[in-house]
Image 1: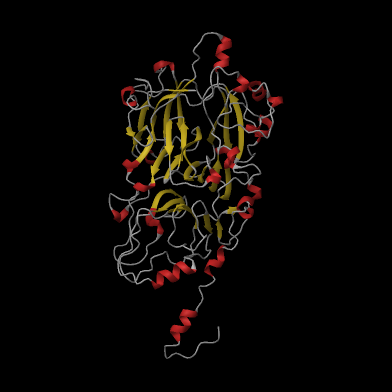
Image 2: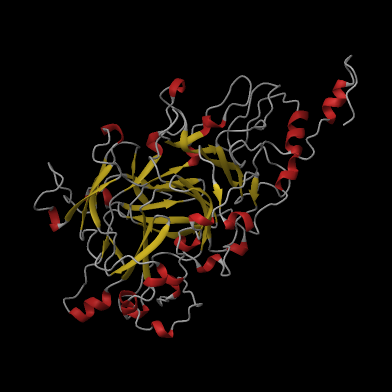
Length: 555
């Protein structure tokens, strides 16, 4: 698989018109901003000028529009991108989309894998073994996240999970890619869903053109017809995400948003330098949010003013880059030998469907528009807090929001981050950790690293784990964290050091049903609620005895 070097390698993107700012860590160019319209081209003058769909497109490309909103959406929220590609998306759709079990028996799949009968279904390939195994297809679940909507159940109890360090299936996470490595935790179908992922296999990789077709590595790609994905890497390796519009590298304390309908592949990147978990060597782990209504947008700043929270110049979008599938020979037999084999996965109605094709879907040479994937470094978040007294509402840490269509000011889902370098409070009589709480919203929390200030008990809320407090379910700091905070004289402002932990929250207006994986996972902390058992009234009774009030009844 050959990438167009014009927008991937340093020094070439700008000369080719791809534009962007060079990111030294990622070794990629990015377009910076948010909410504006971008344009990028991997070949000089590939973008048509003065019109969107000319009869003669430069380089004989195909013009294709991708709409993320209805044509008649107001201009302020209308999202669309024009793509100029070597093949239109309709090319290859003569192979029908089929469920995984049917695809593995289809003529199109067996045609690309002549040695299918000799393959062991339990022999999953690794990155160094290019053999196409039928199990690559068959280990895909019929429903994305390994859970059908009818299998979800209600449970209002407070939930907590230990780190999701391995895959829940009988095979380890090393045998799964991103598509099969996602597990649904909680969902309000057709609105919002929360997953965790753990995978050790790449969706795409290079195969030598000299290999026969049956030995070539299978290239896999996914597009989501249901909603937008927000990916939060946590442990193991960083992510390398290729999309139709270009490349993103997403590391620890970063997030990526992949809009509905955009084709992408997720591969493992570099290993986290501070991740010493040998049990998960080579495995990428993290959290995944899906919203099926609305779009991610920045929260309004209101009286905060014109700066703060997310600065739009810190949001990174890819520059145009494409896979060059053009054979290097005119010989038909050699052309066929040089072709890669691709499986296109589609998440549609919560189910997975796949089809095969011979060309890469990453064939967009140029594009312009405002419907674009992006990434953001959470370390760049400019947190706002109280400079006088009280611990304010966590909404002040909102990074992105998806407004609901109901009550004003209520979000379908907010993505909130609790930065490690924030100042908790400034006066001596403010409780440092968050207060006890019941909320009309549902709160799902994850911990990227370190210790969360409201849950400091040993072996409690750990990096890679999660908690869920549903609508009106009581929650708050554990007993030891609360008692320590009350005893703290707080003689000076509490500033958390940059090395402190970073937590995040998905907050939604919907009550969430839980999957069998969430309820029966060995990672579930069944003793979670006991962390509040020691929050009794003994301190109140001791204080009351010192007053002139009548005696209290026995406890």
